[in-house]
Image (tube, rainbow, N blue to C red):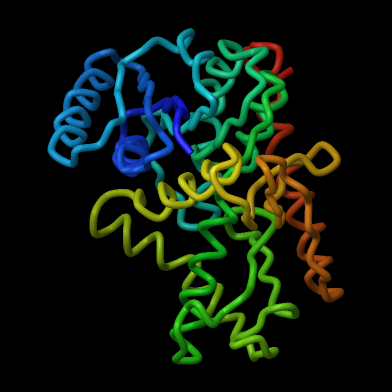
Length: 302
């Protein structure tokens, strides 16, 4: 399948990695790159054009304005405001106040855009809600997809099996309130023990190890974006864990996507997992209330 155009907002670490992955996708024939500065977008386009030529890829890459994104079949949102994150808990939520006005401004520029938007900027669940509420575009956050991958890797290492043998999900909030669906997790198709303390520690420590070593996570989230785009743009059918609107709050949930149309596939949860999901929902609702004034473009809370 060919002929897809993808817009990318943000020429930083994740935007660069997403763009490089898309250059290698045969179904993506055009990339539209925009950033807060034209120089960064133009520089990334130049580098990607070199890559496309050397790799003999047919993808055309252009630096554009936000207004030009209406040409895209899907938009990936991954800009990051300038701020210093000193948080040791709820690390992803620490960027909420800084990133919210940036995302709100972008959403107002894309009001009426009716095709899929994939949100990367953290806190991804809350900002997916902000973007989707303002723009009315179908907006999907990729945080729980990344958490699910990390969960499976941690469990595979614990049980000393290939990661392909593990089937399990992390839903709810991308952050400290992530809900580990241990009761439905299997290894080689059979129920298994899940060392929750070990898994939670790995979900917290894995991104920290990456950030300390190379400055920022990029490849894992970028691959989650690619997986979501393939399904939402009807390149392939499959199951993903994405943050979507569930009764007004964006939460990570299992989706099956067929012919580009997602259907919720809720997992059966144990009572404590249901309680954890309700806690995550309450936390995300409370976080959103602190930035909901951006829906009207206000600069201060009422």
